[in-house]
Length: 258
Image (cartoon, rainbow, N blue to C red; front, side, top):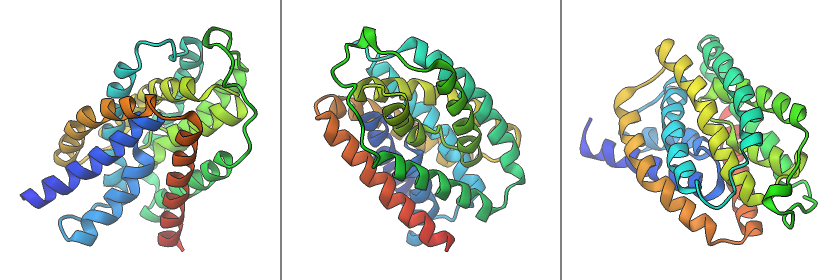
């Protein structure tokens, strides 16, 4: 493990975690393809899909800790939403992380590609405004939220993601949650989800610890900085940035699959 390797992994983790805090995602939507392609392209390392999914699971856990801590004040964390979706996604992510061991490299990439494609479609569905609803008056279908979180958890657990890149469009489009509450609450839900994914990945030997440690350091620095940047941005701008990132990532992953 040389200096070039450390710098490469750190920068990947920093970029993913900054975006995580800014947009309320765990960062895996960015880090998964970056870890899969950039170290190999630069000749500093070659990670398998299983190894990448293990590292991103660790990164998501620590990136979301930093994000939730930065959002702890302001009333944007919806405790009821976090409880219903958090418990469901935790169960689902544990199941997904455990069964991922039986997936081939192409199988994991295919699951990731499908998730990214679904997220792209959802991000471009017109959203009918819940932005003007006061935080304390926000309501949602509890059992629909729990069911969708469980399905997302299984899929996200397979690829080592927290699932936020799917949770965010679900919360915005289906559950009609205001953007800033979605961003803050999705970080908390993704943190809970990553517990299940990490437990399963570690217990099945899918984690590379040295790159994981580098990513953790980057996450703890970058995620709170991303939250600060996100708080200053227009909510529509945040949605557009997320939609573009997910679209580009989906195209890149599908180019690799096809």
